[in-house]
Length: 77
Image 1 (cartoon, rainbow, N blue to C red):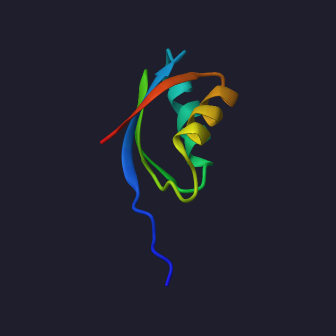
Image 2: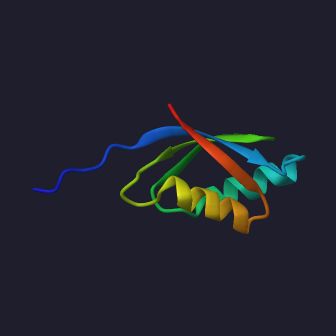
Protein backbone atom coordinates (compact mmCIF):
# COMPACT_ATOMS: atom_id res chain seq x y z
CA UNK A 1 0.00 0.00 0.00
CA UNK A 2 1.34 3.45 -0.92
CA UNK A 3 0.77 6.25 1.55
CA UNK A 4 -0.42 9.51 0.01
CA UNK A 5 1.49 12.65 0.90
CA UNK A 6 -0.59 15.26 2.62
CA UNK A 7 -1.05 18.51 0.77
CA UNK A 8 0.02 21.63 2.60
CA UNK A 9 -1.17 25.20 2.40
CA UNK A 10 1.53 27.77 1.63
CA UNK A 11 1.67 31.49 1.10
CA UNK A 12 4.25 32.72 -1.41
CA UNK A 13 5.54 36.29 -1.35
CA UNK A 14 5.99 37.42 -4.95
CA UNK A 15 8.02 40.37 -6.20
CA UNK A 16 7.50 42.18 -9.46
CA UNK A 17 3.71 42.22 -9.43
CA UNK A 18 1.91 45.52 -9.98
CA UNK A 19 -1.45 44.96 -11.68
CA UNK A 20 -4.35 42.65 -12.46
CA UNK A 21 -2.45 41.37 -15.52
CA UNK A 22 0.32 40.21 -13.17
CA UNK A 23 -2.26 38.45 -11.00
CA UNK A 24 -3.59 36.57 -14.05
CA UNK A 25 -0.06 35.63 -15.17
CA UNK A 26 0.85 34.29 -11.73
CA UNK A 27 -2.43 32.37 -11.42
CA UNK A 28 -1.84 30.77 -14.84
CA UNK A 29 1.80 29.87 -14.09
CA UNK A 30 0.88 28.25 -10.77
CA UNK A 31 -2.19 26.43 -12.11
CA UNK A 32 -0.01 24.64 -14.68
CA UNK A 33 2.02 22.89 -11.99
CA UNK A 34 0.91 19.38 -11.07
CA UNK A 35 -0.24 19.07 -7.49
CA UNK A 36 -0.88 22.80 -7.08
CA UNK A 37 -4.31 24.19 -6.33
CA UNK A 38 -4.41 27.99 -6.43
CA UNK A 39 -6.53 29.39 -3.61
CA UNK A 40 -5.95 33.13 -4.05
CA UNK A 41 -3.59 35.45 -5.89
CA UNK A 42 -3.23 39.15 -5.10
CA UNK A 43 -0.57 41.69 -6.00
CA UNK A 44 2.46 40.59 -3.98
CA UNK A 45 1.40 37.12 -2.86
CA UNK A 46 -0.32 33.84 -3.63
CA UNK A 47 -1.99 31.28 -1.40
CA UNK A 48 -2.04 27.73 -2.65
CA UNK A 49 -2.27 24.10 -1.69
CA UNK A 50 0.82 22.11 -2.66
CA UNK A 51 1.17 18.33 -2.90
CA UNK A 52 4.91 17.73 -2.36
CA UNK A 53 4.68 14.40 -4.14
CA UNK A 54 3.94 16.20 -7.40
CA UNK A 55 5.57 19.65 -7.11
CA UNK A 56 7.85 21.33 -4.58
CA UNK A 57 8.26 24.89 -3.35
CA UNK A 58 11.31 25.08 -5.63
CA UNK A 59 9.09 24.16 -8.59
CA UNK A 60 6.75 26.99 -7.61
CA UNK A 61 9.64 29.46 -7.44
CA UNK A 62 10.96 28.31 -10.85
CA UNK A 63 7.51 28.63 -12.45
CA UNK A 64 7.16 32.17 -11.10
CA UNK A 65 10.67 33.04 -12.28
CA UNK A 66 9.86 31.78 -15.79
CA UNK A 67 6.73 33.97 -15.73
CA UNK A 68 8.90 37.01 -14.90
CA UNK A 69 8.33 37.31 -11.15
CA UNK A 70 10.45 36.74 -8.04
CA UNK A 71 9.41 34.38 -5.25
CA UNK A 72 11.90 34.79 -2.41
CA UNK A 73 9.97 32.90 0.26
CA UNK A 74 7.12 30.51 0.87
CA UNK A 75 5.48 30.12 4.27
CA UNK A 76 3.78 26.85 5.21
CA UNK A 77 0.44 27.28 6.94
